[in-house]
Length: 214
Image (cartoon, rainbow, N blue to C red; front, side, top):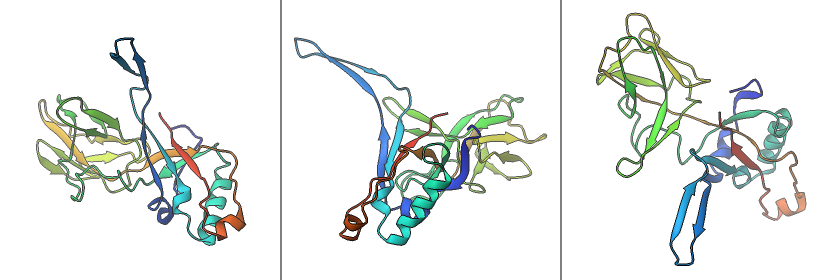
């Protein structure tokens, strides 16, 4: 992630009450017969959120304005906690070092990128995880958990797991991990329009956010 990114988390109490999810782009051509041809324009999904749904009080609104100003609008990215999808584990399950497959050792490879795979049967999608929550990452080699700090480190800015000398996975050993993670996003506007009279009456301000792709 470039220098135009601040490693700071958007106010959590607001984020967890907001709305949003993944977006994809698909071209669809319909022929005279009614048959369709579909083509994916994006190899990876991109998440969009509206933080306005989480703003319920004037104090919360002031927090967002201050956060927006410090980010200079769209200029600087930041971390966002997606309430729907922020864990490597299955829904309602605790994190396990066996949650996600990262690759297979060859006796020399020392670095593995954190990823999360969605689906398993027809067309599994693997998503790169670049913003793990610091100290949340658990790693296993050949099914046995290894110790953070002595066997491996994980860069919370890139999501790269690095095995330390003497702990590099052996050839054929499966490398797996479990973790919490944030989404790198930015504001999708340089203008926050807030009608205080409408806000007092219960109207929700629009505060759009969009995921930053590496």
